[in-house]
Picture 1 (cartoon, rainbow, N blue to C red):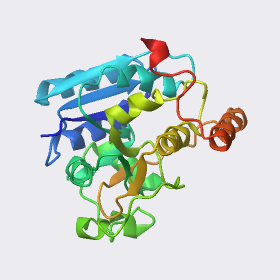
Picture 2 (picture 1 turned 45 degrees about the horizontal axis):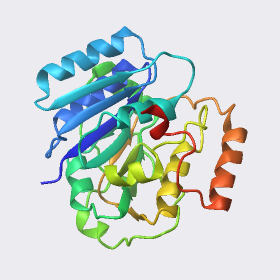
Picture 3 (picture 1 turned 120 degrees about the horizontal axis):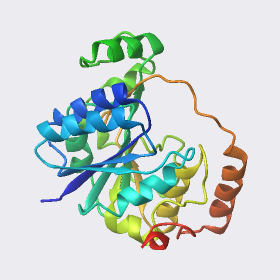
Picture 4 (picture 1 turned 45 degrees about the vertical axis):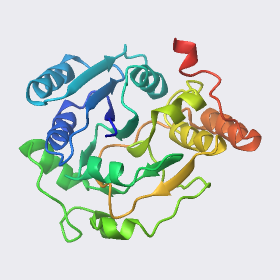
Length: 263
């Protein structure tokens, strides 16, 4: 049986993390390990994780680094180096999981392929209610406080209609993404040349494509519910975009500053 790790990024939003971890504990197929990549949160986040460790039956790892600004690529690489499972499902700490989220990603996993699922955005009012109540109720296409309602439809039989492609989709995001650990090692993980918000997830995905890995969308399955929040600063987007354009143009596969440089 394939061993699966859930890789979760977080930063200073313990109320959201609590909701997300609760959804992890309720999965129809539990991940064999949960690795929390923490980009410098305060101690209140640690207390949420410790509570989760008590109730979750499988391995939980908390990989923390000092808060020196947005350094997501670095903390992801540090976390990836701790993972032993063959398959990795990646989310963000503001994305609540559908009950069959892990099951769906495993169901559609294929060798030489990465998957990306659907993200249902919750509006500000719905998010505030959830944060205050600390209780998540199931969402359907008819629920209040969501947009793009068809993304909330869970019908895995329709997911089979989507074929693998060797083209980068604009819908690929690190908050709902799965891949084989062996493929990550081939491309040297995330490229730590990306500083601040923007393009690092697309870079990771496109280098997988350059290495020969295909991409597959699993719409109507693998659903996450994204909590509303203010948009991150995009101060570094221009320099990150320049790096990404070079990766695309030269079809670069291996990150110049990645996992190997951390060994």
